[in-house]
Length: 364
Image 1 (cartoon, helix red, strand yellow):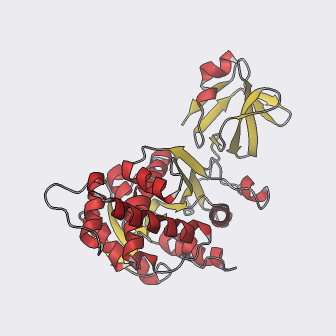
Image 2: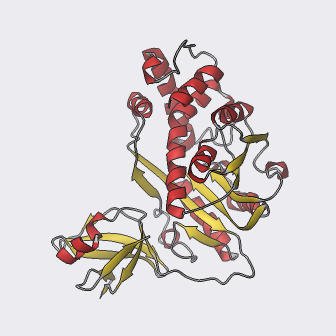
Image 3: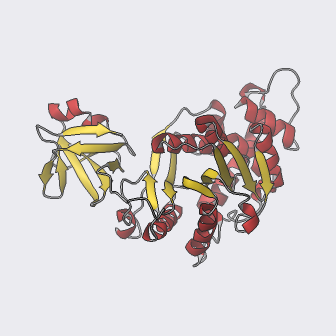
């Protein structure tokens, strides 16, 4: 966080200059914190509430950019790190499209050791990214323009909360976002991947799933988090259904303070994300017998703990008695949302699976 505060003070007009050691949370005055919290709340409402800021040049507003840097940057960094860890990606060179001040590219650099090219329409955001990620190349371009995809030879292309801002609210939004993805796919090395991260709101998440299903229908493979390449069962379940990842995280003190002052809850990080790879004619397509946990543990009326699993068959419950020693030994009760598991010899129940005496659970 010290590096983020230092970058904010150096780049954003109106922030005080601190002499001596690198600025930290302790150097922010109550007035600065209130100003930042007010801007955080405007961003939250404008991007995930009424979404009035979506598609606008909000990163060119110094207050909004500062709020993003000190509040949303750590969130996006943590989300990207989690997605990279769960998907097991590797890449030597990455392209971050709609990068903003670079939280996803920073996670890619730290987690994979990859060099990155960052593309965004905001010069101010790119200047901050260059300060925070030494050696990163930057390019100012609109995400929908052909110029936004420079060169070739990328092992990974990332979209961190950027695709949802293309044609927001328009009927052709999925098609236009698909065009951007197809253009990005053309610059991947063989076997390269695309990481898409979107907000966990109902509308943004369902749009992300629709985009995923569009790609799957044309032969793209979903590497993570979905354990299959079939249409998402959440989308087919009805307009109030969706699927997203959420987890606890080591919340920085400054983020916690800004959330408190803005009246927001930031104890969890939530996002809808996918890692996909475009079709390769020579590769055989296989369906892995793995299942993704897509819910928190729930207690039903019969006194059983159950999770929802997503796999080739769709979504279905996996349950066990609360006092089942076999389930406890197998690690059933310690399962968490978005764990990827293999299940051997489950009990076949009327509407799903149950733990039986010989059931085994393998993570990963």
